[in-house]
Amino acid sequence: MEDRYKGLELTADYRLTQKLYLAGEAGMEDKRVVSESLDFQTSGEYLKLGLDINLFRNWQGMENQLLTGFRLGTSTYKHRLHGYAVRQLNHFWQEELYKPLDTPIDYNNLSAFWFQLLIGVKSELLTNLYIGISVRMNYLISDKEVDNFDNLYVPGFHRVSEISPWGAGLNYTIMYQFPLYRK
Image (cartoon, rainbow, N blue to C red; front, side):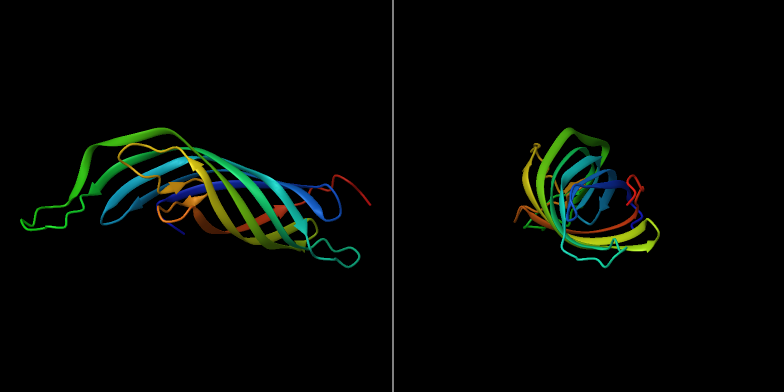
């Protein structure tokens, strides 16, 4: 567990056919990153909607899943810059390169949009109680640029890189299946 991270995600899926599920995830994150060169905090909400396809053929009475799927995700968030280090190649005078800010700089009304591919499993532990894990590949389609600061973290997408719009993630869930329909 990270000391400077708080987050909550609610997930739901709805069976459309024997193998096809409508899936959604909504959450919030608050993450602070403190390093030698940067001290910033990102907080915001996100929503992901998509489809899951169950690739597993269950025996009679089983509800386990080996699934693949996709999500479209969007996030609204803000950054708060607490301090930064100036990158200086000629470090002759040995001055302090890290600049803490007396008043943090806020970057509000930021947004991002991405596409996500996933593969995972869900297994029934007890009647109607499931545990799941999935690996996700994220592709950042767009994010709102700000002056003098790069978007380094997006809630729901996670770490953002200047080098590539691709990212990866791991998601684990505990789910309860509400028995809406009886067989």
